[in-house]
Length: 348
Ligand SMILES: Cc1ncc(COP(=O)(O)O)c(C=O)c1O
Image (cartoon, rainbow, N blue to C red):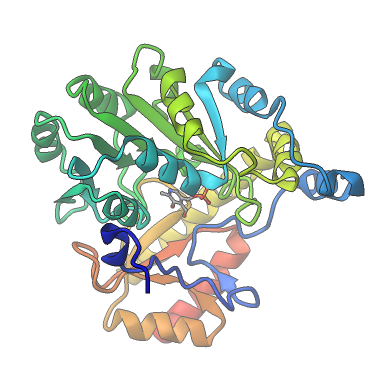
């Protein structure tokens, strides 16, 4: 059998348990529970059949996204989900043997990408109270790693740090490409995007998967200096984004009210859920994002399994550094959180 590259032979497959979820209440992958705006669905329905047979056109899409952020279009690249933007960053910048720096636990796809490139992985654990390990990261940055990823708010810890702090880190490490994963920033309103103008070593990742409810369509964006966007685009296929996603994205970007309304619903449901946990004396962490980390009393795996038996999925964090014994709970609208809470109380 012909062997793949050595770094690929060594790689454990990245497995997300995504099968058989559809009939369940899906509070495990931070998706939008209600689905996208009806205008998104209508935009796909309206697509003439001929367009299915034609390679997709992207004209105007990056302009539309850039317009929503009030920046120039050449500062934006569109990708097949933020995952594809992450992959492109490693392909373009992740040289074998060069250091990749990240605080852990964080989003699970960074590590396999770094391993695949054969990078030297430097992981710094979050503090026991899940605050960001700023001092140690600051120190490590002085050694000039090739790539530094920061997820803000962080998935799964919810930890939120001030955009200015990230900019200060980036300024202290001009030879490091700083990747700020802001997939959930729409739920916090805090972003480094308005501070990007004078930085040529920072790139921000965004997505329409979560707030806009388009996870199945796969649309992500990178925002940063035009040279970074150009290098990411060089390592990406010419038709990576399909025409349905393009049509849907225009509609999603136009329907700002829908997204604002969903964000408000999640914020209200999150406050309610926090109050319930407070009353029960259950530990949780919920700084940013449409998700919380919850430490149930007793055996976490048993609680996760009990919820599953009642048709509710949450994501167990068993075995992860610092957050072992917790599960991640996606926050959807109030009705779904009431359903979750009734099942949770029955179990604990
Ligand atoms: C922190 C983070 N980054 C990136 C992604 C991937 O987003 P997308 O669906 O746009 O590929 C996710 C998805 O869960 C995520 O949590």
